Image (tube, rainbow, N blue to C red; front, side):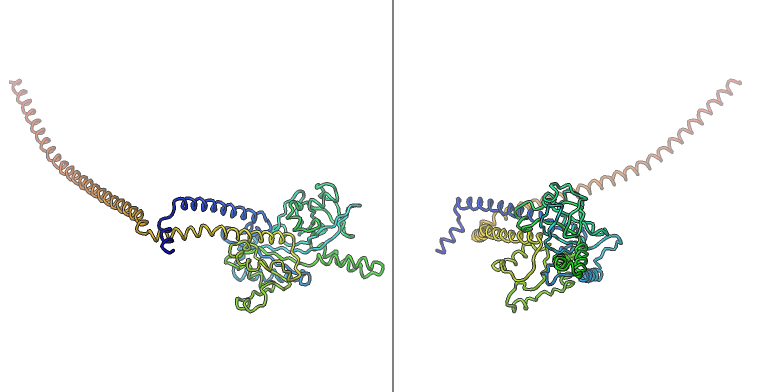
Length: 456
């Protein structure tokens, strides 16, 4: 049996080799297709790409989200305390921008409740997301009309409708400036955004359409409802309004986009600010369960789709349906978790598809080892050719240098000859000049003699 395997490795069947090459080529194409498709799916989740939009070439950023149950929801003072801790951390580590008008990090917070919106006789029950901070920088929901909520506007009674709510109440999406009622409070429509278009969006958002209002508006609404509840004649109805409004006044989702110069810097900074302690490896081993039974949960959105993170998440795959806390995720987190599940499934497919290429690579290594003498011949030939080329280059270089030396010597010899010739020319010139002077003297003498003869 061992000899057969050795022979099979050393002398593979030609059809087997061709078939293996074709199969591996097809698998590589499929793997590339899966990677490209999954990468494009992640990029479509605009709420998960805030760090990529915010970071610069000189500083990487990360997006970290913290989700709370209603029992552990945050108030305005809690948000201010968290912001102060993050600012202090960044300042102490010298990661704040030096420019006075530049921001190094952004954050957003949101709450959630269900409310009935009314316009004349038309009503529609909706998901009401009460938001604050830089919510629409982190969640740039596509606009159809108008603008996003202006958090700095003193008039907090603004509302942003999704397209479905606008059509239900007004029969149009061109409704900027119109009024809607939530209970006894009037809100001005400031813009319209896209609604749930796909089945996945509808599943993530739930039974109702969505609208967005500043959290300050619901805090004021809740405060006025509480005051009204103190009056005897308004009793029961006001109390109900107060209870419904109170849900929207508490933060159940806090999100930060901040510098992440080293791995997990942002995650650890936010965890420290919100009071979350990560278990050590030793504590995890001693724990009866590795699932989260607390009332807050932290997620690094930037790293959640990385290979190693998805691989680690596979350990909890069989427990994924267990509900261990009272945290209700907003629809954008539902979409992210759905995509995370799809990415894990795709990773499983990729790992399975990699089995054949890996086995083929092992076989190739075994083949080359068993035929190493023959396999090395092409490499030896290549090395010999390279050596020959190297020697030829050296010889050519030597010839070139020798030619340059000869030319230099020739130039020096010509220069010496020219110098000697110039000296010889000067001597000859002096002799000629002397001869010319002598000739002139002879001619002068002849002239004098001729004049004397004429006088006689």
